[in-house]
Image (tube, rainbow, N blue to C red; front, side, top):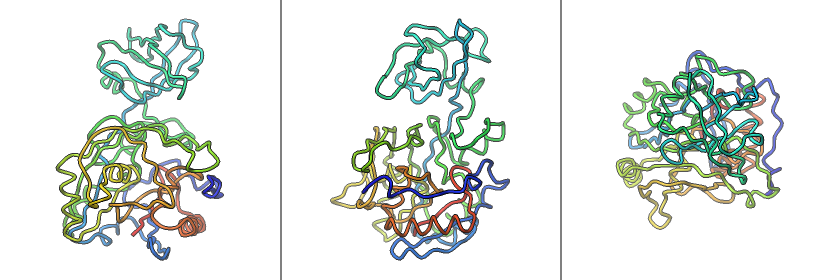
Length: 344
């Protein structure tokens, strides 16, 4: 299949620039995977689609305020977006303007008196630099001076409200530079209502990287190489997921990032998941279909993106295209702060 097969025209005013005042007040397009039939509901009705014995899989990654700013000795401003920790004190980072930075250069950081970072290396393949913070507690520095890295299609600076809203209510493991946005709709009350229906919650971790926003440059989808992201599936979570499947319950992934963990850890011979940690480059797209994930809650995704391709692996491209066309006609809100879609 060609990347252009996953294109669609989106009116720019449908790209949500702000979160709704109440998380659960978003709209939800519900689509049957097999038939493509769609209906519109409110997200607060989500527990109605949950059955006793189902397992909801949540990605508990926590977005870090990964944007830092500094000034070079020449006076030029530098912006860093920390991507991943290589080892204590050493981080892989995007930099703007990255090409002008010299190896060994020290850059004083704004908002942190007397704190500088050293450019320790360069990764030309992906345009990243290595930043050496020495013995500093980097997460503590980010809490003091970092900014939440909102996606590029949100055309404003991050504000204080984004510290709360661009974070799921169940986030607990710092490391992501983008939120697992399907989870942004949940409140503690919605989760409790799902458990009251007899569902169990399983928490996995996938630290979302900036590659989730990078465009696919290949013409054919099979030629695209996915960015790697760190994941963890604990024995406890695997037991909950496998137990639900064995008892006839459904595995309901909250977000494409949860799907990536599940399908990375899937044992195709047994239909179970195997606990583990590592880095995944799994690329789910048609004609592949998920092995252990039965239902998916997800937001609406960018045209020609790997996330839209993943969603299409749950049904047919034609069904997903029709659902997106309906969402546009009904003026649903798109992308990170937008409405959501439930595939059942």
